[in-house]
Image 1 (cartoon, one colour):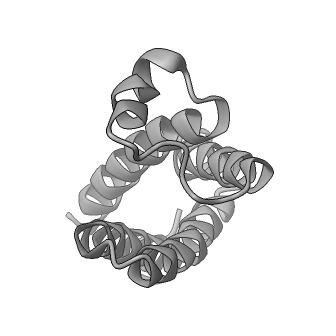
Image 2 (cartoon, rainbow, N blue to C red):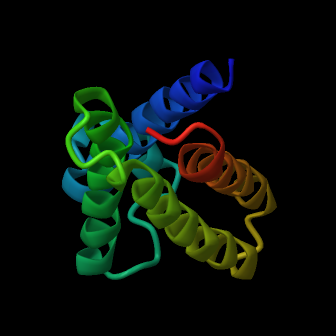
Length: 127
């Protein structure tokens, strides 16, 4: 049962971070046009750092699924989740300092899900 929970969490997190990472790293015009019109894009962070975050999120999404699915270096899966915890902790601080409280809540939920996923794959149902 816990293995199914872990896989569902891995899949959800991988999809979320794959999408967000692609948007952050390559910023395809159709996806960001509406954000730009609302004055929410680009975020108030340096472009190179934004791309770094995006690439890290894409790599973490891959790390949540591929090692676990293939059985090759499966210990990378909880490390990918830990990396997302670190990125999300920084995002919570970033959004809190900008007083973007709804974003803080959403990011905190992702942080919690990543932490639970890492714990499950490290201690409860390791691969």
